[in-house]
Length: 422
Image (cartoon, rainbow, N blue to C red; front, side, top):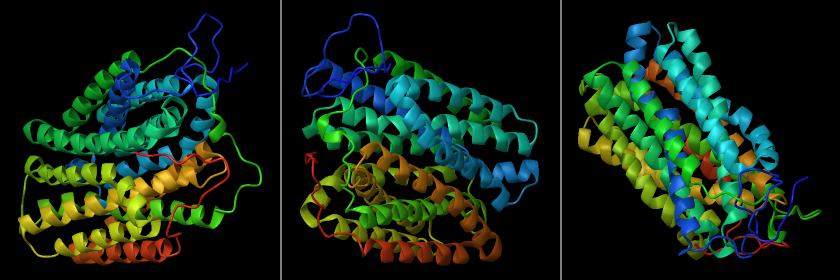
């Protein structure tokens, strides 16, 4: 039987028969050694997962050339993983309530590492695609359990800050996987690049297993318990889900196709140099950690629309054949997208009668958008090169803007919700 204690839990297992210390009612706070360990462990899990998801992005032209597949087909290597995440995230979120959030994350990452090695060694494109889909399903354990672990274990006043730092860590992983993959592929082969990132993820998984605080049973704080009949925010919540899916469709599609553009005339850049464009993720790392502060000052709708406007401006900046403008444009796209993602992901839990379900549904929509967007913008590239890609991206942003325009200006106050400060 699951033991529920006020103030949440720090443990991996949902039940444990041996002796265990009672957690402090307030949850983890800065200054607590366990708090610092939690930050390091969450950073390791986010970095490992997202490095494995996106390592193939700069390698797509090399995969196309060696395995004789087009841009649309090659982009399925990204979409297969993100679709796997979308399909598995809700079942794994429920499973983590029984087995423990931390244990679910670590075991899922371990499975993703094994699948990543299999993908790198797969002799055919079809087998590689299958391994990537399995890898995504295993990696779903991280988004399924990480933010739930934070809300259950961290003191309410610090949840937003820790969650923002976790999201910032995922941007570092996404950037690192792309950059390391591109550089290693330039020096060796694209298969070696995938293996190197998988082995690095294995080391990060081991670090997370050691560092993540453990001890007590998974529980739910009173302010996080399901609230019957408290679902007046459903329309806003649906808009938040759509916003996450549309934003991710645009973002992943643009970053998929940029590898083909930098390989093509007039740039003709190698994989290693081209992967430096993914350093623009650092702009998203900064805005994701600041987004909560902006939302508190200007409101949910204004913050989301500002982020989308930045995305549109960034995409337009990439139109001229200028390495500098392409780099700056991608940085602006990343800054705008992660601003939108940070406030939308937080709102999905805040606006839900059951926060863990709201967060899980948002993650499903987010990665479903990624899977669709990667294919759509790949097709746009094959039809009309970068010009068609830009038109498709701006169209998606415009639809997202129409969705965001219907969001509430300020945070709706719900019964039982305890406001969080970051």
